[in-house]
Image 1 (cartoon, rainbow over the protein chains, first blue to last red):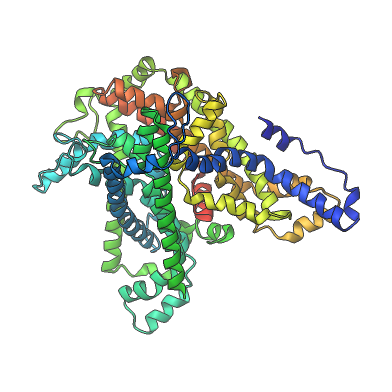
Image 2 (cartoon, one colour):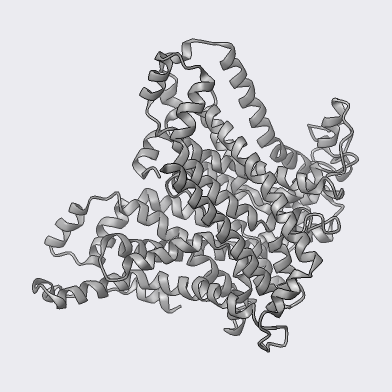
Length: 311
Length: 297
């Protein structure tokens, strides 16, 4: 690749011109700056920026497997309005996010608070909690699918101990989404826990001591000191978590493949299906634009709320 | 966000530093509850992995028993031999290694190079350019994978390892992480080097790269793991079986032998084990890298 050679080859340029100040020096510095940025930026532009722009164009065409891209205007979008599968995918995406975001927030913040205590085994637990996040989704999905197995799976056996008749989990249209969310929370809580821990450790101890002096209990200290101090972290985590939930794909593909029926079909998977399975690239691009706008709007709203709270 | 130095100070040694602090002397009810919570959480996190390893050593009929058999009897090491015979494991591992090593190398190289440009040199449009990188965080890959695929196919790269190499190398993540680190390096250092006649490239190679070894370690570990575990990229781009990575291969194997639970678990252990080892060796850098940038791939 051209980009690699240009990074490895930068022979130290003679610094003679550098002593003369002025426009020439500026141009030279700019040129040097560009040579640093360019190898990565070229790849980034070709593989990310251009596709991001192209998706809007493609969404207005009827691009299919034959490689022709007839201009169809807004046809794809009107088709989306009447497409029951699309509606289902959109609702499921919101369902997944609505469940996954708060649960992950609570679990990861809870773990971070726990780990911020001076307990034995904290270092070990931090490592353990992070582990699911770096494990391949294929392995995670197959293990959980077996754990969820309705008849003889360990989870339902465990529930049976308490006299609970476990549901069919990934085989049940009602329980498939909660099962997916459960695995999602399990996988990601360790990651966000690390972010919260980093945030917690920037809170000055004096604040807590002052709180204690004023007679604030543990709950009051959490509510009036910890939470407000964590606001920047909380905001950042929420934004990342929201985008991550709206775009969820591999977890679904591997755990339920959208089923049973369409009970766990989400937007990203619908894009995948329309594009790579049915080769309906134009329509898939239109759904992509919908996903893109959804992420954009939600993120923008979060930024506005965050700014308003700061004032 | 917290800077690297802050994070490093607090993360790696908490375990050791904690034990001497005085507040440990009060074994209150709250502390007991906290310990219990910790144990329960640890069990919830780790039990699926334990179950995976145990099942991989069982005879197939023993995987789903009521009640769960926690110690395999008999222990069937044969599963690990059998999966190797029944699948194309060697090819998958070879492809996965080529991609993981190649992507990691290229990402560290171009990422740290670009990060130097963004943090230590000045040129018109620099900040606007960086904003482009930042803006794409809010754009999920799932929203532009279609045009990306169409484009790479037109370039004749689909169904080649090159596509995967290109796809994963230029993520904005490497640039972020390295830029965060470079910005903690005092400007005086590079200024002094400039006065000594070192070119910008020389400063990058002789000062910045050696200084940023911890950040590079984070980037190496995170990129390697991401590439190793990637499922969606290979799923879309790698169609011929001789190009399959471990994840795609394993997934296909699961589809073919869907009742051979013990074998499937053995395959899963094989796919997880290298990452587990890498993670345990370098977990400090892992967690620092993520706490610093707040992002992953």
